[in-house]
Amino acid sequence: MGRFRFEKTSENIHLAVEGSVGGTTLGLHMATDVIERGGRVLWASPFMPDGVRFGQLFSHLSLANSAKYHAMNIGGDFDQAVEILIQTSNSLPSVELIVMDDWCERSGRISKDKIDAVQKLAEKTTEEICILLISKGSVDASGQSDSAVIARAKDSMAAAGFEVWRLERPKDGPFRTLTTSSDEHMLRLEEEGFFH
Image 1 (cartoon, rainbow, N blue to C red):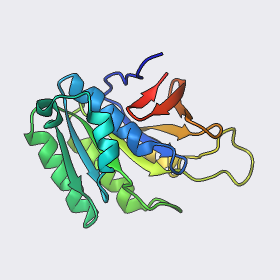
Image 2 (cartoon, rainbow, N blue to C red):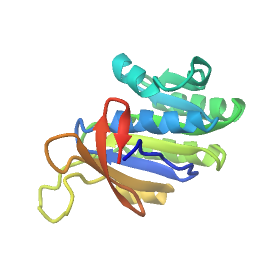
Image 3 (cartoon, rainbow, N blue to C red):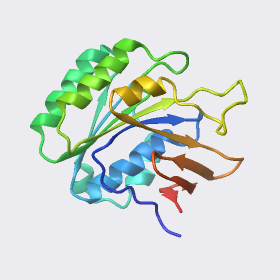
């Protein structure tokens, strides 16, 4: 039972999360794994991660390694933010992960403009870079789904080249289920990240 390690992937991921189950934490956890391997991370969000949470997840990294994490605010013009991410990822060395947290509307349909923008990001960055989009999923009101959360715009995101992952809480407590395109992981959420 140790810290969960995210293997290096060049696949792009759309992570649908059940509300307040650790989506941002999962992004930060992946970021530290990339940085430990020598890669660089670009983080874009309308809100910066909670400082205490950030400190907990990055506590095992050296100050020099922490400098490989670059954060920007995407609260304004989304298309402009995507352009900046494209330029930055192509000019900085060893960028391996771009995380866009809370990149779209919190509920309802994800606008075509935003899907087109993230598809452009995927097309204009190198294949070595994994793009992780984190957004709130929707709840299945029909009772037809076997999961608590459904990825919004699943077909559009798949057409744009994104694997669809889900993060949900099977019951109260620290346990989470991460469903990737190929596996289902039962994880435990702790201060320092996810453990299995």
